[in-house]
Length: 256
Image (cartoon, rainbow, N blue to C red; front, side, top):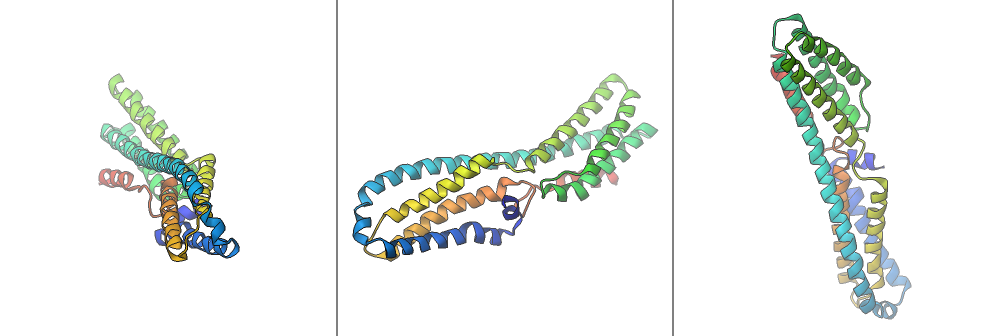
């Protein structure tokens, strides 16, 4: 469900995550007012107001924590891509030689980056990885190790460090592609949103319209926060996603 929501266009995602829940929250207020006398709701205003303030603060802290954590992990996914592209560019430069091992390393790196950009990136949007990219990385290791063996120890060590950086960055982005927010936290976020908005049903005002407006405003803030989390939960899915441009640019520059 989360993957489906992340993959929707922003406008359609906002409709499902924000607009529809806000409309349902307002509808709930109308239904409660029809079934419960206003005099009974007014009696709750003083005590319910104090408890609502506590619930609201607790949920605001949880929501803010989740937004910050998701943004931090999204930035980390971008960093993994930059690290992978930087290590690839360094390996290209180290392998710039006319000897056969250097040419084989560059060709294997070309094949790996091409597979990542053209095949693995679309798969990551569905929480999957590419077996072809893994095979291309294995082939890159074979070529690079042969090249490293033919070079002095300092250069050979640098080649292996860049290979390790490429591998670690790839594993990092594949891990984050599966989603950032754990199920337990999602349960707390959704449950807390329902409790926070549902608390407004214990209040009563003589004029229903202001109460509907306040309920809608509260629900909009809560579900807009959830929409931000949904948008960033899968860093490689949907319109708000980490692009493969840094890797594609490295491939383009060195293929010239």
